[in-house]
Amino acid sequence: MIANRRPTDLPQLNFDDLVSAVFSVGPCYHYIVDFYDMSIANMSPGFFDAHGIPPQEIKNINDILSLIHAEDMDFVLKAEEKALGYMYNTLTTEKITRYKASYNLRFRKADGSYGLFNHQSLILTMDENNNFIKSLNIHTDVSHLTDKNNYRVSLVGLMGEPSFLNMEVLDDRVKLASENSFSKREIEIVSLIAAGCRTKEISKKLNIALDTVKAHRKNILVKSECKNMAELTAKSISEGWI
Image (cartoon, rainbow, N blue to C red; front, side):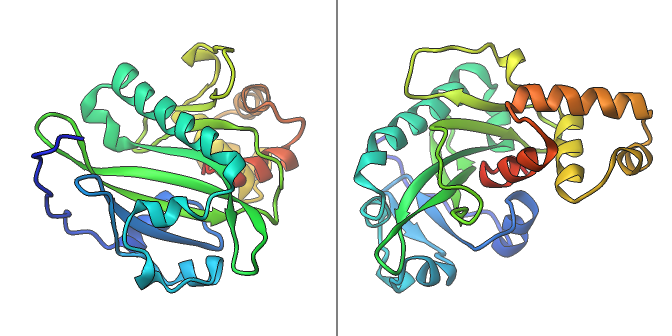
């Protein structure tokens, strides 16, 4: 963060429309982070339902971090570093705002227990030096889908960009981007599968051959490391891929 950098105004956005268009539907809340002073703004009412804390009491990012399970803090820091490094080193700067970063972590809930949440963030504005200014963050309670964290981070492409999924964070294993990337077409098919569409329906909706859909489904299972479509659907929602 540049010390003398001044905060900028947010673009004119309807946050509810943006969240519903970009992020998975579920029990969730969203807010804006200002990287100038790490303050929190535009906290949605769902925060109280999730954590039992009035949204107006959340002033800066430390108030959010205090709710994270202590054992997940190291992973969160490394996941943020991984996502940031990938954005700056692999993506062109003009494409950074076309990607949402996604990973899972445990948050303290309203009843005092900890549950698995999916964290997603989308950079909204950058300055002339390509420093992040503001981001839209959303946390979705996925504990009803899974209680197991794969401790990986994904960069999900928007507006037709490819997605890079399941990037390792806590160990030294490395995958080439081409090995764990989802194309725009594959993301479309994952979304249709999650919506309950069968192969023939997907073929008709996307105007592609049945064999092509079958080939995509096979490749998607391999890339996602899922055994079947039911597992793929649960994972695509809990990991924030769609």
